[in-house]
Length: 481
Image (cartoon, rainbow, N blue to C red):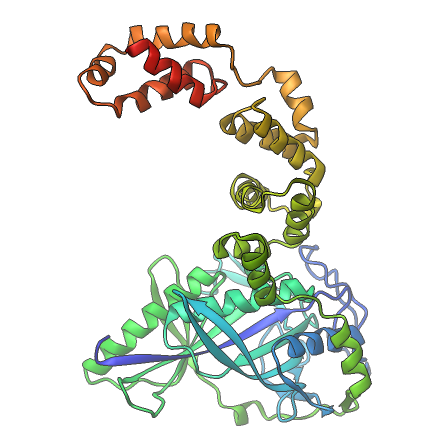
């Protein structure tokens, strides 16, 4: 890579969180039976007319403002014409020459370095349907394909960056930043695994220091930020090898295979003129007033970058913890509510980003939809502070709290899982451990003081994690002296 540098631009397609589609009243609910969320409008039946969903425009304007874009007072929709089985009208209603917003930017942070990535444009369009391939997750290897039109007409907002990213790590950070922004605005849930946030990477290489752009390829089929980084890494390596071998890079669309870690050619990359864009005759131009923009601007709350800065400065918690808290909808509100009752921001953050996040991710839950309440979490932390339960016991208690919705006090009372601080009871457990572990005991007496850590762990094991660790350490030293 020392001879070359990579140039990366990204196209993010975000499904907007409206209840109905962009040009009809069909539901946008994910996961319904195939071809249930359809009507004559979104399936392109003769004689129907589209009607623009105002909420879609509002969400796009809100995003554009948060990304410092210029909102166009006048924009138009166009027909992007191409044939594919999941496109019932044989064209897609999108925006081309006059998009809704242009010339924005977003700041990203990679390894402590802040970079500004320019936003070229934001435009609105309708989604296509989905092909379901029998016998395979892709068309290759399938015996036949079925078409599900539920997604047809779902509102999409496309955010197109300038080619300002130099590494796959920067591209990954950019997508994560955009995803966090969209979730904080409440316009997209950014679930890449469900397709509500999709990303295509345009990448090229050039000799280090060269200002001319090389021939780009587009990498599709990435369903996570990790897959995006891996796909871009693989494509950069492929292009370097090809150029060094004297081959010419052609402009094409490529698919990333996560199993092989390689990109595979899908088709030559179409140019804009291949789509034969022309203004959509069934939709009037979209005019956005300054008054409407100002009204939407008033509804934009604290953005992720601002919240990160405030949390770090006001509460003194680690940046990576703030980023984890902001990834989950409702987590920030839960965090602030907990520290109002309890204080100790870093301790609250540790629990939210640790055991609680692990549980929620495994169950695919958001904290606002879980059984855990701010008051019950604070109640558990108070029990730890009082010495009623240990941190180890608390890790078991929090899972039961999340499972049942019960308070820590109820769970501890039912299980009897209080911390043992009675010296007599602990000495019995310590003496048993000393008797059953003669070698570590002798090592300790021979001057290997680290052996006491092992012995403390054995006492914790015997007491099923209920012993008070600092008291165990003190009593062990006394017994071994």
